[in-house]
Structures are given as C-alpha cells and as structure tokens.
Length: 79
Image 1 (cartoon, rainbow, N blue to C red):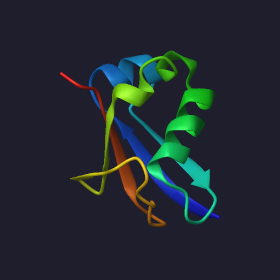
Image 2: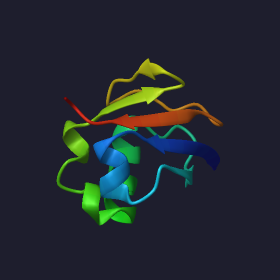
Image 3: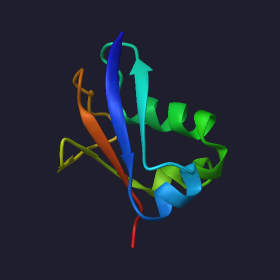
Image 4: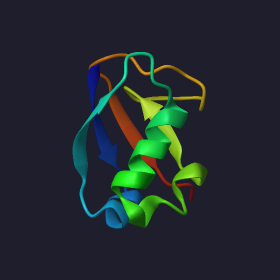
C-alpha cells in the first residue's frame, strides 16, 4: 500500500467539499485508479472527474501514469 495526498483546486474543491485529503492506494496505482477512488469517495466529483486534469507533484499526468508513493496529486478542473 502507499499513501498520497490529494489537493483539490478551484471547482474541484467546491465539488469535493474539501481542499485536501490523504488517500491510501495499492502500490502501482495509476491516475485512472485514483479517479475511480475519488469519484466513489466524493460523489460531487463523480460526473466531472474524468474531464479534470491531474498533476503529480506539479507535473501534468497521463491517465495510465503510475503514482509514486508519497506524491501530492492536484485535481485541476478544465477552464
């Protein structure tokens, strides 16, 4: 297992109802895996999470990109 922190930006923060959270994921989890976890944990994000950008430690990430343990993921809505 690994722990990451997730930071919600702008509209994502409003939809999640928080600005930051910690998530535990299986080692080797990808951005796609995280999207599913966030949609389940934060129903307000469920309909829009697939259209939002994700960044791993301030670098934009692909959906199939693995998340390193201890990373900070930013959830960034499209403008």
